[in-house]
Image (tube, rainbow, N blue to C red; front, side, top):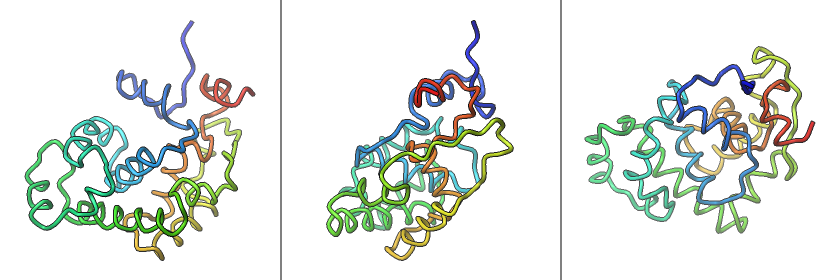
Length: 190
């Protein structure tokens, strides 16, 4: 029997594994939340699949997404990253990653955890949608707009409402698996 998946998934094993094991699973690990925040920012203007294919390279280049290390990156490190063909070499995005690491640490200090801070935008529980088709899924929501404004106010970059919604989908803050997808039932028992 062939599994039915969301229509955006291609047949690449890496993409299948991402969809089947990660996307939409409620995530509360600070380290992984930081990774998704940076990767979503890197995706701006690109496909998620292009980022996913470079994910291991990003992990190596960004000290396995250790926010304390990334927050200390200087112009010399940015210049070295600009030479790394295994990642997205965009100076604005690279500097934004450093800025976001600094803002991430500040949120942890102020709120206690980035997890508690970020999940407040959905009331601490996943928002479970019931989309029949991909066409129904919005590119952004009121929640992602609110998140974007708050993140920008706190000094984050590359965190527009569409990027924030992608982050919410990836980290399971919202369930946007279509109702015919096997993961919808597996994650939410409906």
